[in-house]
Length: 105
View 1 (spheres, rainbow, N blue to C red):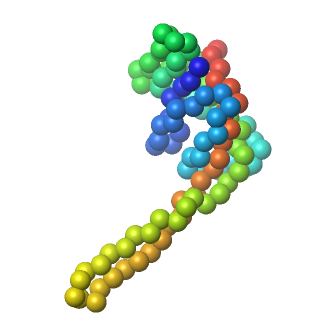
View 2 (view 1 turned 45 degrees about the horizontal axis):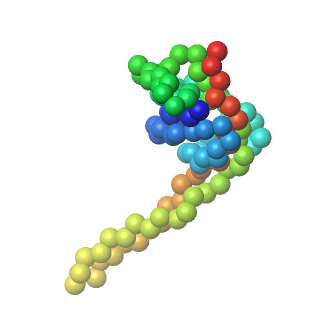
């Protein structure tokens, strides 16, 4: 069984026991969180439920494992022969989640 869930502005395919990294949440480490914006639920080989836009009565339960910074990404601008260059880096703030359960009411 897997589901596609919308968390913030992104969509993630999750299964029970998966660990995913998402944009930073305000919840503390070790706390349980629920996501109810489930777009698609596949519970078997041929059974697929698609929401319009979300499925009702289905929740994804997850636990916050840790908060961390992502890998540094470098943005670099350069113009040849003009002695112009700009370099700066960015590290995205992320939260690691462990999917505990995908439940139907």
